[in-house]
Length: 290
Image (cartoon, rainbow, N blue to C red; front, side, top):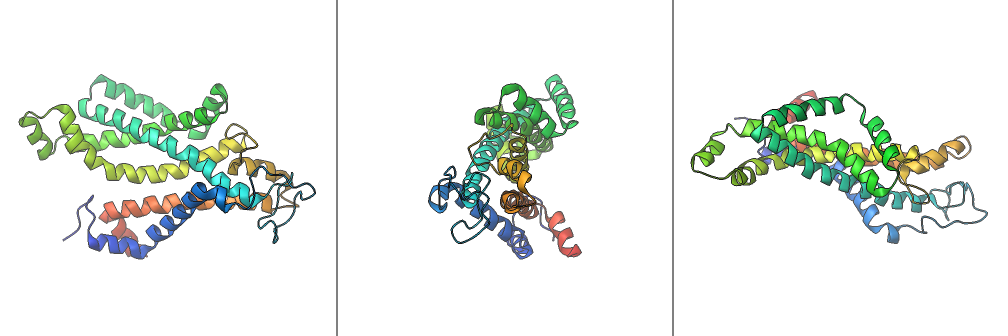
C-alpha cells in the first residue's frame, strides 16, 4: 500500500533520512542560525573594527579569513553578515506567509470577482523577474532595513497566496468541510479548524524554499547598493567591494560568496527534504533514479 500525500509515515521518514538532504540541509541551517544568534561572541573582532596597516591581508593565524580593503576582519564580518541576511529574510518571509495565506485562503474560500482580479494581478507580477521589481521598489522607497523587509515581503506574498488559494479550493469540497458546513459551523471555525491546519505543512515547505530566494535577493540588492548600507556587514555588500580586488585578493569575494552559496543550499535541501516527507511520489521517484 502506498503512503498518502501529506502523511508522514515512519517508512517515508527513514527514506528521507537516508537521502541525506534533511541531515545536510538541517546542519547548514543550524550553523547559519548559530552564527546569526551568537555572532557577537563567535566573531574574534567587532565587524566594523579597522586595523591600520592590515589592509588586504591574506588569511593567517591573526585573521583566519584575511582582511578587507580598509583592514577589517573578514571572518567577523561574515559571521555578522549572517545576522543581517537572516534579519531581513526571516521577517520578510514571515510577513509573506501571514499575508499570503490570509489573502489566498480568502480568495479560495469565497471566490468571485475579487478572486479573478487578484489572480490576474498575480499573473502580471509573476511576469516580471522579482529582482527587477525589488530594485524598482527599493529605489522608490529608499534603502532602509524596514523598506527592504517590506519590499521583499510584498514580492514574496503572491507565491503563498497562490499556494494557499489552490489548497483551499481543493479542501473546501471535501466531506469533512461540507459536514462542518451542514452542522452550521461558522466560516471562521471551518477555516481555523479544517482548512488552515491542512495548509501548514505545505506552507512550511514553501517558506524554506522562499528563505533561500530572499537571501539571494537581499544579497543582490546590497551588491547594487540598494540593500543593507555600509558599514553594516552584508554579504552582498562585501562582494560588491571585494570584486575590485579579485585579482590580488580573491579571499575578499570567496568568503561572502561561499556564505551565500551555503545558506541557499541549506534552505533548499531542507525544503526538498520537507517536500519528500509530504509527497511520497516525489520521494519514490528520487529513490528509483538514485
